[in-house]
Amino acid sequence: MADINVTPLVDVMLVLLIIFMVTAPTLSYPIDIDLPQKSLNPPPQTKEPPEPIKLRIDASGQVYWNESPQPVTALKSLMEVEVQRDPTNQPQLEIDTSPDADYGVLAKVLASAKNAGMIKIGFVQPQG
Image 1 (cartoon, helix red, strand yellow):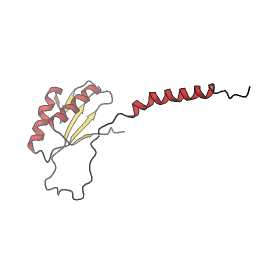
Image 2 (cartoon, rainbow, N blue to C red):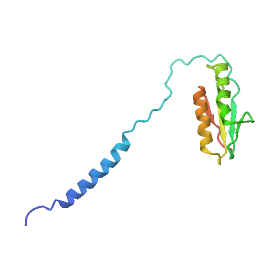
Image 3 (spheres, rainbow, N blue to C red):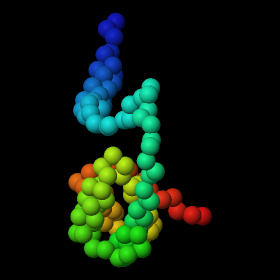
Image 4 (tube, helix red, strand yellow):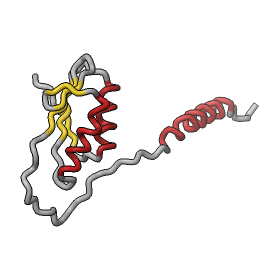
């Protein structure tokens, strides 16, 4: 019999087809990211930046606004007051979290900051 056996070739091609069908949809989801744009003429900074706001989240989920304990529900109003003082010269929000802090509390803090219109948000790096 002089015919070529194509069964192994068909098996390999079907496996490759299935692999591509499974992985292709996961590669096509776009992710929206707002990247900073290059500015040739940066605006002159005439105002002194205000003192940063120190926000700390401990392991129990308690939030401290400049070392003063605050409920998570009151953060949005505190942030809105800071933004309304001078929207063009906002203070930086420095978030310090305990390694054992609940991520849900941090997510609520970040959502409050976004909803209040804060644009300068940073995370404090742990010492050590």
